[in-house]
Image (cartoon, rainbow, N blue to C red):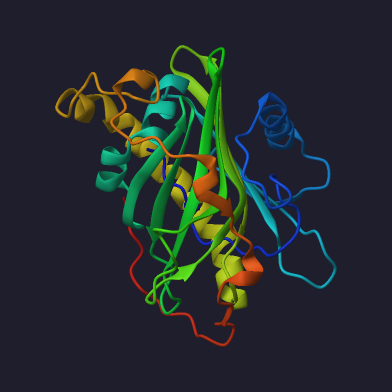
Length: 280
């Protein structure tokens, strides 16, 4: 379903956790309301860039630390909220349009609107690639939609030797319908990439990678209807839970993924390589 890691490298660290403590819980209505409020709030956020209908804000939580949170909002004048929701959920379609994905799959379902899955993604060279295991939940609210996740541990999917296991403290999307064929997409994330990262990665993430990733999502939405007609058009388990083929798993199989227990690598001195950017 919708990818579980950031759409670009995020420069974040420890701090606020949406799901506190050591107990894995499924978000309730209050958690969704809190996420929506933070998506809408601009107080305490610093405007980083605004261009072509895409706005990026950042927020730091501790003195002397790199930026901890990012919020990116895109106005889509040619995509419905329903289509955006489908695209962010459809794992098979993501493998087609998301050039950053290395591997993504669903592990199991918890409830009709919560599951657990794996996602790994490419980081800008020469950084090591990252992966995450997350508990994801989603909730349609009228014609608006929220999808959000946070990191968990599952015994069958430990960190890999060739990957850095990142931590999603809170990551998600809010899609607001603004008309029959228009919507606003807000991406809000706090992710610990487990490592001291170069300043150029910070700048690139907020000034280029965030807007670029949002544009790719918009382009993917424009092509989705045609693609879906040729690929199991009626299969949408995120709308029709009875269609899911995922095995049921118990919350007892999961625990909170604390960043402190994972490898922390120092990549702060790595130079930037000028690789060709994906233009899709």
